[in-house]
Length: 325
Image (cartoon, rainbow, N blue to C red):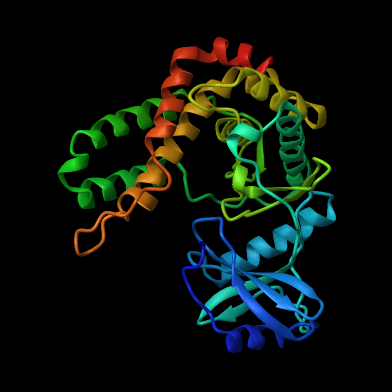
């Protein structure tokens, strides 16, 4: 359950008072996501989605909500934030920024249920984000090479003996992956985290909404495509049918350049390490409580190391063959 900050009905009513909405009937925590606290506010006019930003300050929340409004206006299937009576986009709950969004009904795909048609639609939607965001000013990301190096420092300092042999190999892999990335690849606004739990599906098989632009920033489009391929098209190894369908969907909206096609493997290896490292800091290190109790790890970093190794085995030409590019 993605509820890190529990709120009362009274607090929810205080937020709603700043909007042109009907009365609150109830509040429900929303499962899904890992960073923010999400709620369904049940009102007399229907459901409304409330997000409480746990890691971003007000400036970050204002940037994200304004971006979502622009993307929705440009045709990206993402719900735009609801404006307050004062025309602002961000409210406050317990000192944390919060925003309201229209409720979008839909389901999420498990890995076993993803079809080639789904992968094609996701690829096309990702390309629409890249095209729609071309006018966006560059916004720095939180998972650049230096950021990941600092996370490795933290693992080294806080992880204890379990990570003594792991951190040096991750440092070497990260440095090599960073050095192998192609300079000058086309870049712009990227989603950065378009996993299966970030896409809602309608009953007719169309996408109802792209969610959670928390990691949206300036980056290479090839990196963003490979993040999405790794998230949707890999079980125990690459599903070539899904991967090729996703690449086809992407290129139906935005063609990859020759340099991008050559650079996909390097971008993918860096992407795999990005998620392996952040899963260690965000899940593995947090799994052990102060009393020594170890909670189950819901997102295993080793699954992304398996992707990293598979990309190394395939090489640039092998990946291009899998993707059909």
